[in-house]
Image (cartoon, rainbow, N blue to C red; front, side, top):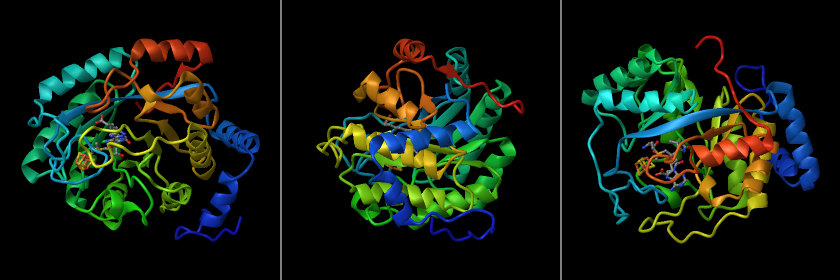
Length: 326
Ligand code: SAM
Ligand code: DTB
Ligand code: SF4
């Protein structure tokens, strides 16, 4: 690789050309390499399981072209207020029984208001007390808000860059790619682990997908979790009629994420209801080692426990145990 040292002087910067060359390898070579990398860092048959809950649904001021929750598009979704803390904890207990080890709370906001912070803190403390890892995704955060959530014990913050820098303004105009990177830096500086990834199937090119992964891999510290979503086309949204992704291209992208970010959990995220079991199996072989479990994501469908349990049995996969700190 044409590698340079990053600003910590201890990791190699990934060059776009090198990433493209990896992506373009013959499929068998690409998957073999991804599997080799995977096995240096992870147990090959363990899958981390997260559960999502929408704690504040719909009515969002942002114009993300893929989203059911943007107030700009007639998606038919009913908006609701921030959920009561007790209800969040009741749902989290159910998720723990279902085998999830990480609980991710999502709010349809451009950013949290200061008056919301107390409730978010109580949710984080409550979920943590149940012995689960905590994750939140609530839009842009200031350094002060990041510090407050870190103090509450937040383990992860999810904030996706979604696509390449070049393509970003085709998908979202109410904020910039640089805004996204700034929140990721704020969260990282506060000591919270980072979950950041994107979506495939929004009309982006292969180079956009590769560039998105190169941006993530070249962050001063790569994200600990990298969700790769396949667009769930939402009727009424700007991307309702986007062309579906070629499954082989999707698997290639997972393999590249694994190779560029060996230590990250790569999550096969939204869109699994539209993937065959065989496609999911290839994604796991390519290095995906995390999923969302349960019947729903935030507003859209997910395969559900029975289907996933059967798939895990067929593939000999096991839920990943929590690290000893938890
Ligand atoms: N409002 C917060 C934000 O945008 O950061 C958090 C919630 S937002 C729904 C979280 C992520 O879900 C988005 O960044 C996007 O990557 C993913 N997502 C949303 N709608 C999707 C869809 N229809 N298909 C696939 N992924 C989607
Ligand atoms: C992520 O990358 N995918 C999750 C999580 N982070 C917050 C969200 C998927 C949302 C899918 C569409 C929906 O449920 O509305
Ligand atoms: Fe709002 Fe997040 Fe949906 Fe964008 S992705 S419209 S910020 S909820």
